[in-house]
Length: 407
Image 1 (tube, helix red, strand yellow):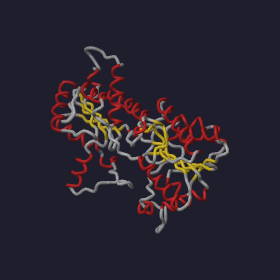
Image 2: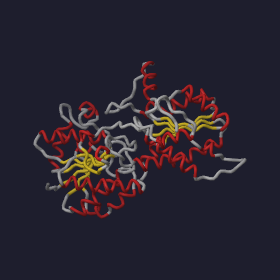
Image 3: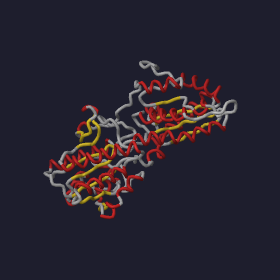
């Protein structure tokens, strides 16, 4: 396939991989196909609809290495669903009567884009698939190669999404400081709210990393702080039901002997209960353009903190969210290696005209390949039956619900 011009966009929430993924793509094209022109669309699909783009100049190519050292996205993000016509009109991205897919397709056509790289989660990449399908139906061939970005690590059938490992590391690091608050207050409840709408992987993995780091700390006998004060006492994820009554009884005992209780809570844990309560009282449940409940607006951490504090008799309550801290980080070495491999393979697939989302395919023995768009789906759950997670819960004395068992 002859590739003359490439487009790049990042979309959805940010993750510790966007800037570096752009950097690796630019570097790889510059190494193996320097004649290929590269255009970056500003603010994701918003920029594509509005024709807002940034050309990759020789100066950008020369400095592309520096993109590997930054978090965030130098070209901006947005949450835009091209098939949600009403939302696109409301936001002024298209005019009344226009089809966003057609507007985006015309822009790609007029810009002469042969390959579009989309760096985002399942919504970003399935939207890209809608766009590629529309173009094909209208006799315009576009190769779309996505890179899977999400700190939740919840995309079928991809083994590990870009940025997730860094986010888990940073989430654990965040709580290292927050945990010290419990040493200064009597009967304190700390709820650490972790990102994760449908999948508890980030909460579980960050809790594991935190407890491993805790094992490497030294504690002072007689005066403290003690290991128990800084330990995690509960981990709640969407994949497991929460029995508030029995957990409150267990945590009250912990608070009585420990001075404080520390909870790692996935923001999606118990959301169904919160939504039911809101609907029962006639409150409107806030949702985004994709129909997802706006978790920042319903505030799961505060909801659980209020109920647990009353049930366990906490005298002080602290709710801390690590999401923006973790997702804004620069990638660690573990992620950089994965991002580089995926970006290089993405360029290879693009030059061969093979569309798909780049990742290690769980259904193909972990092969790194362009996974077909129709197989890409979000909401992959974390398995609470994994031995390391059951061992984690067992170590903190948290029983698993019926159907599971601690080792």
